[in-house]
Image 1: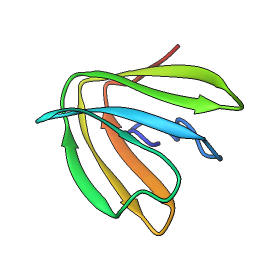
Image 2: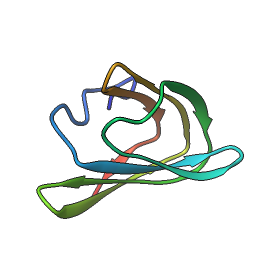
Image 3: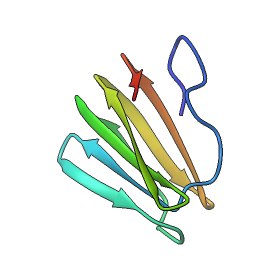
Image 4: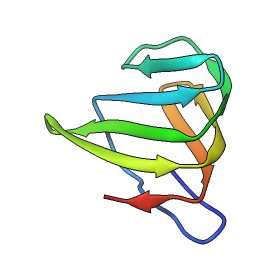
Length: 78
């Protein structure tokens, strides 16, 4: 995950939930490729069984070949 200001997170996760413009959606290992715009909300991602949250204003997420890339604006790490 990156923002215009900095790299927010890079590493392995077990799942993630995103605030897509058509509603929330989750991504887990083996998910089909996708690209989606993000609206204001929380990205929730799990590392070692522990959920973490990231507030975002908007952005875009891509899932391709087992790699999730999220470019977001107005992020505040919790």
